[in-house]
Amino acid sequence: MWSNAQDSALQERARAVIPNGMWGHQSVALMPESTPQFFTRAQGTRLWDADGNEYLDFMCAYGPNLLGYQQPEVQAAILRQMELGDTMTGPGPVAVELAEALTGMITHADWAIFCKSGAEATSMALVTARAHRGRRKILLAKGAYHGAHPWNTPRPAGTLPEDRAHLIYFDYNDLDSFADAVKQAGDDFAGVFASPFRHDTFTDQTLPDAEYAAGVRRICDEHDALLIVDEVRAGFRLSRDLSWAEIGVDPDLSCWGKVLGNGQPISCLLGNDKARKAAGSIFVTGSFWFSAVPMAAALETLRLIRETDYLERIREIGTMFRQRLVQQAAEYGFGLRHTGPVTMPMVLFEDDPDYRFGYRFSDTAMRHGAWLSPYHNMFINAAMTPGDIERALEITAIAFDDIRRNRASVQPSAKIAALLPR
Ligand SMILES: Cc1ncc(COP(=O)(O)O)c(C=O)c1O
Image 1 (tube, rainbow, N blue to C red):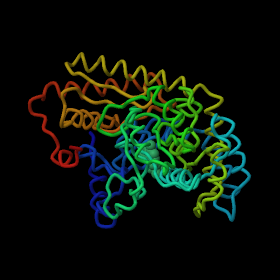
Image 2: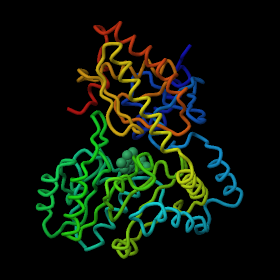
Image 3: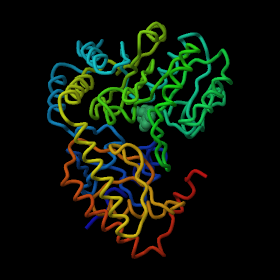
Image 4: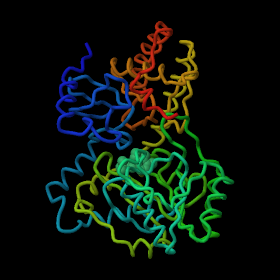
């Protein structure tokens, strides 16, 4: 019988020693009320919480788990490097090998700088774009998340209007809106973050039009401004190259994180020769940016990305999940919008403006062993098998049936209602 008694006790202790009990998107504040906060173990496709409940995990650590938790070859590379040294007075040879591997795989990239988080990579991109021609204005798609640094945090407490003073927003996938923003920037246009696709929370996902992507590239070239693609969330789930390589558009800079070390803390900024001088002029570092273990994990992850059929498998599994879940929803009398790339599914109920069905659905699924999100895109990993999807569908059948039977009495969560975007 599912229980969250241990987790509740931990949450109570956490509230005494951690503000709000947990920070950032690792907090389960936006999840259904009883969602566990703490995990003790992860293996392959599975997670175990502090009460010992096992979950088939569709969040994949919010992305990093690409090949399966504790993937054996990556794990072996981690252990080998740990024996030799991790954080040392400078980087290991693995830093060069990793930069060579990435520049060999990512068409637009001629160089790499490694860091620890996606936000560090995006902030480095912002500074590099400004350093390129000494200009200030950075263009961003409205609502796009690029990390929790002051210029982009979704909760601006403690930040200043000045932190965003030189940011200009445009509508994603809308070339006219982008051109207007460029006009506003005038001769101070430094660069643009053009997200690989629109993957905002609580909303359907939008893939980029090739025309939009090509238009952004052309306008950046006309102004000698840098085009940045923030691949932190989508990296290697859409392509073995940068996702926009699939639509024939190369950026000047790209930001990577999450999957890079299959869960080890490593991220990077990649760039082309045009941006090399600017990247060499900025001062960026961190005490752990040289750590060799995450780099060794990343080198092995990249080898597996190049040499295995992981991408074809996650596409196949993601397609199966999408088709069967939408069909199952219809069988239970629900419309389901399943948007975004199949490897990063976003699942929202039709006619569910306050998300009450989505939240009830995820809550029931969680209590029966499938970890789904009612508001955030999910992730498919390469350890998932058709058998795992069958298991997930057994669980989602219970969740659909529960809502069908209790349709009239399902209530929106008061906590969530207060937090929802208006
Ligand atoms: C598109 C995108 N950019 C940047 C970030 C920030 O990455 P991190 O949480 O590693 O700082 C995220 C994190 O979710 C992201 O989705």
